[in-house]
Amino acid sequence: HLMLNIPTFKLNNGIEIPALGYGTWLGLDEKANFSTEDLPKMIDAMSYAIDIGYRHFDTAHLYRVEPEVGQVLNKKIKEGVVKREELFVTSKYHREADVEVSVRASLKRLNLDYLDLILIHWPMSITEDGVDEKIDYLETWRGCESVLEKGLVKSIGISNFNVEQIKRLIANSKVVPASLQIEVNLNLGQNELVDICHDHGIVVVAYSPFGTMVPSRAAPNSPEPKLDNPTMLEIGKKHGKTVTQIALRYMFQRGIVSVPKTVTKSRVLENAQIFNFILDENDMKTLSEFDNGYRTVRPVFWQNFTNYPFEKLPGLEQIEIPLSLRKWKNGLNLDID
Ligand code: NDP
Image (tube, rainbow, N blue to C red; front, side, top):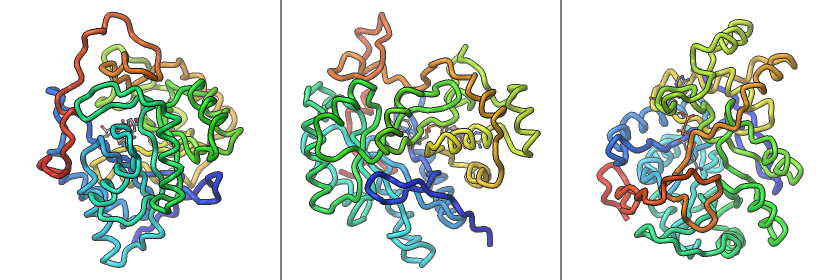
């Protein structure tokens, strides 16, 4: 049956990371509660992803889905579809001060004995109750270096760090991060951060790789390109590919890993069929011109926290952190510690 061959990039510690992964953030609904009703669909889509050759899975404590992600991985290992050492599993933490406590709890929820990559999810530190703990991310990084040394994880990295923060981290650490996960898509090219990373052999992983292209992520009046953008359709037609495939291929040719999220099986397949064509120089130039610095993901409710990495939007001083983000239970019924 169908088996995709997804290429890899090499991390600065010699370990290979598949150039395409499966994202597991299901999002919040209109009432800012976790969309866990999509979890059964995600379990199906993720199982299918493994069957057709996905090996890289991107999750986080914050997503509350680690128990289900672990169930699917362990089922596929048990069925002999995949071996643990063929999988690349990432999780992320930013709540607890003690990284080892976080990692051990995550391994328990996932029912795994090591992680391939852990990331400091955000440069801010936030307690269980949503309080700004103001812990320096350099201190959190020492915790990451320590779990690396103990063998609980194979690689360590960061997420949502800005230029100044990543420079400070590199200048003050023993271990250079293996990876930086940030929003990258056609609207948000992130050239400066990508260049810094590539200079240090740090692999960039793009979250929200479709940006405002997909309706679920497109705020009103958000910029082009959308799914019906004529320029995108034209490039797609030239290569016999969909607009979303062009967006993902563009990222791959920039040397960036993407972790698109979908709970739709046909899209699981579609998103991975990007390794059998090449965008030419003209295509790459045309696609680069969509970059206008527009950010899709902005957790404005954290913007007054110490080390918030993005530019602050005015007039949002009073915005509250959604209650769901202050209850740290996991799984379909949100009842697992
Ligand atoms: P994506 O850019 O992956 O967009 C997801 C949306 O696109 C879903 O609504 C999905 O619909 C739809 N979609 C997926 N494939 C297609 C397709 N081929 N055609 C049309 N629509 C499609 O955004 P995310 O924000 O989810 O980012 C991806 C992953 O990145 C997350 O799941 C998470 O793992 C990670 N992430 C990390 C963050 C961080 O702070 N480090 C922040 C945000 C995300 P459907 O599911 O209904 O098919």
